Length: 118
Image (tube, rainbow, N blue to C red; front, top):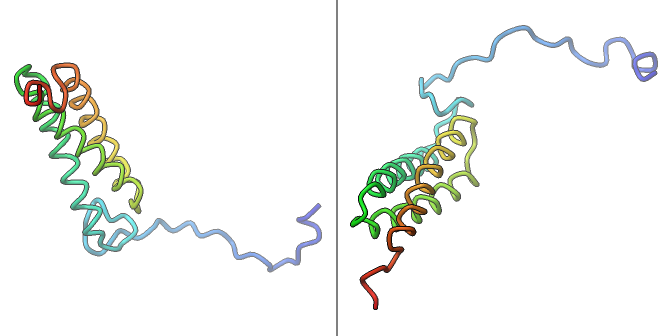
């Protein structure tokens, strides 16, 4: 019914052109603008996630894995909150996932203060 009431030139025809690629060539800035804060947080969350995940495989490194995992989760959560593009959200989820696994395994092996505070 709405199509019969709307005047004939009220809405432009959809464009078939592909979206232009970003001028700076960055894979993460898909909207064509730089996002230095988000990219720095992605790097921090990713490095902390890998550190937490790898150190969680060793029982004696539970302090490193639990703290790195906790900080990686918090960094990734804040980065997810301020992210602008899909690529950033994907990277933050990957970093938070590995940080979460490292954090939980570190907690299972002794926790944040296990053996340090009695």
